[in-house]
Length: 250
Image: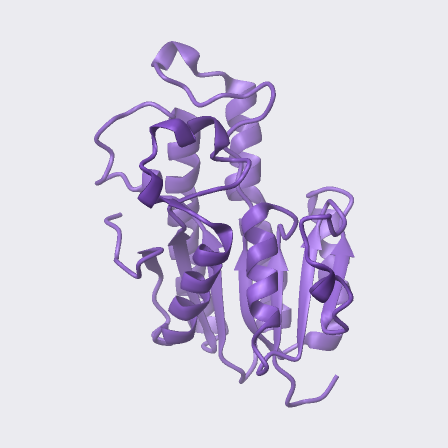
C-alpha cells in the first residue's frame, strides 16, 4: 500500500444505502480503493460495471460480534493511516418479528436489545476498533447513519420507543467518541447523518404515508452524503446533519 494512497471504508455495505455509498465512492478518482464490509456478499443489485471494479475490495463478516469485527479490522492493517472516508451504514428498524412500537404496551425487552445492538453497539464497536487504523496525518471524515427521530428536541409524535432511543443513544456515544478522537486522533471528524426517508427495504412498510418528493433514491442520498462529507470542517466536533446539510437539534 502506497504511503500516499487514499481509501474509503463502508461498513454495513450490503443494504440499499450501503451499496449506493460504495458506488459513489468508486466514482471518485481521488480514492484508490473502496473496502466494503457486510454479512452478505455482493448482490444482484450492484451493476456489472463495478462488481468487476478492481478498486473494490469486499470483505464478508460472519456476524457482528466484537471478535469477528476485530478480525476484519486486522485485515485493514495495510490501510493504516490511509483511510480518508468511513461510512458506518448499520441500522435496524424492523424485522419479521420486530415492529416499531405505537404505544408503550408494545415495548418488548428482547426486541429492544436487538435494536440497540444493531444501532448502537455495532457502530460503537467499529469506532473503538478502528481508531488504531484511522489515526494518522491523513484527514479522515467518518459518517455514521443516525436518524432525525433520535433527536430528543424534535420528538413531537412519540412512539417508536426502541428505535428512537437507540438513535439518541448512538448520538450520545458519537459525542463521546468525537471528544476522545479529538484527543487521540486529531485527523478525524465524525458526523451523525440523517439520510431522510430512502427507498430501501427498511422504509418500504412506511412509504405509503410519505409524499413522493420526500422519498429519496439511495443514489441521491449517497450523492448528498459524499458532498457533505467533502465539505466538513475538521474541527474535532460531532455534527448532526440531515441529507440537505441542515443541523438537527439534539
